[in-house]
Length: 122
Image (cartoon, rainbow, N blue to C red; front, side, top):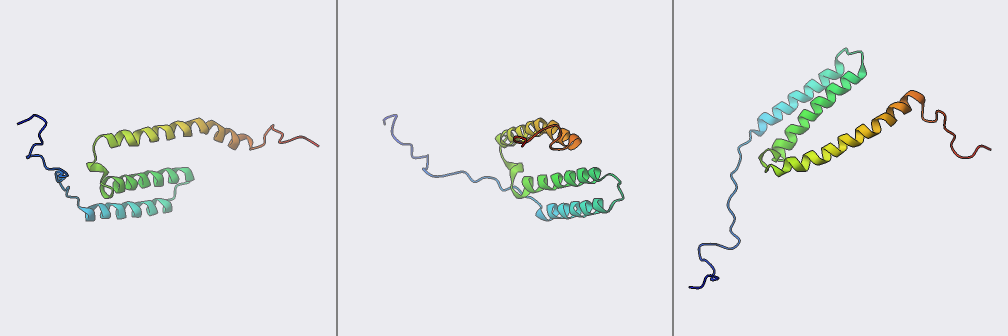
């Protein structure tokens, strides 16, 4: 028999079944409900500085988004390449935010038109 003859043991178009991961969706839903209640509770806390409330709410929202992405979108069971695909855009986002931060801070301190003339003076 020739070496280039097709092997009968290999079926064309046959794929191996992926293992089904058991996820307790009711538990994840319960965690999301509890975190939503905690977010509403943070809004009613008597915290004087509003930015602390915003940071707490965004932190809880990030945790909830992580649960949704990991379990409902099945990213927890993906290959390791998905982390590279996620980390690179997030890194660029952080770099761009850090690059724009001085402009935002200086505009807030001095006003948008401080010391600048727009157009020609008439």
